Image 1 (cartoon, rainbow, N blue to C red):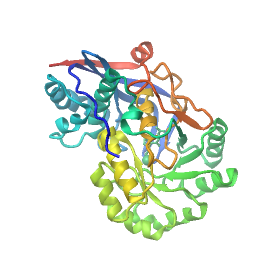
Image 2 (cartoon, protein in one colour):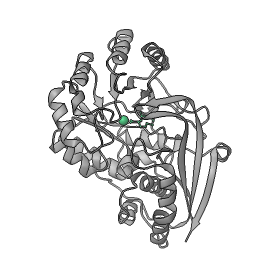
Image 3 (tube, rainbow, N blue to C red):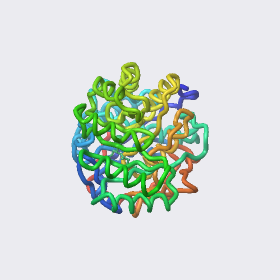
Image 4 (tube, rainbow, N blue to C red):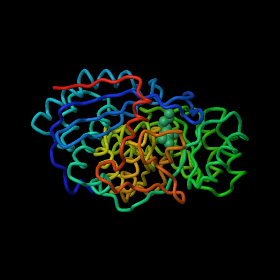
Length: 379
Ligand code: SMG
Ligand code: MG
């Protein structure tokens, strides 16, 4: 459903941006590389009624998508934040932020971070939680975990076993050519009928269809983004050759892209990430059109800090999110989160925050300790 009750405009006096470096509790390996430190941008908007917080989920290098942290840092300071500050001199409502930033092509993660900060400020001022605003219908959401590629299949089985012991209700393993069928078989053999899915992060081509079809025998919930971001037609061709449902992640950069992918039968399931589609409001639009089409969605993750993690829990509480998301606890990635109430796992679920705005408070000392660059922009 569209946003039922819009939020009042806020006047923005300043935008603060910080680059953070957060060490990961263990290296995270995907088909495109290994990360040991999460580099992320935190946004604070300062208004007469208090602060609002957002997060720009770019990574240090443009490997997952074309966006990357120094690019987001530059475009936000040079174009996005000045446009927002200009528009917000007399007040800007969260629903207007995407229109204000629309003249600048792309840079969706940067735009999403700014929009979230405005949403947080506006909803805190109004005493309304983000979940209620977005249309949440549950107070907790099932928690899945994304497991990186390990040294070998037996190390993968150990890692997955640990997460199952923690209570995660769904396992996603990362795959790449040469680390697909055997890894998946090892996890299936070790743990039986767990809810299991795989994510290729664009590592294959249509030529690999026979290999990917071998995964059909494992009864996976889905295979995520096997081909390139712009391979919509090839994904449709691949879907016709697999029994396993194809889920698109990288390809779905907007509600329009989601509509096209569904029309072409390139995806049977969609991973929704607010950063990738330009914000939580566009994420709701993707949710709404998928729900209308009877297509299941789930909430993806970008190794968020507690800011994005809290907001993702609110988003995942919408009724179309019928599959568990990559909504793990803060300690899945971080020994120390930058919020006072780290996201925790409770019986395989994550609680949807009920306090106003994103519903979590920043830990100023943890934030300061993680900050490697800071800038404040004013009108
Ligand atoms: O936040 O739990 C998380 C990470 C989930 O695997 C995850 N994200 O393609 O879905 C994905 C990846 C993108 C980030 S990879 C560095
Ligand atoms: Mg993915």
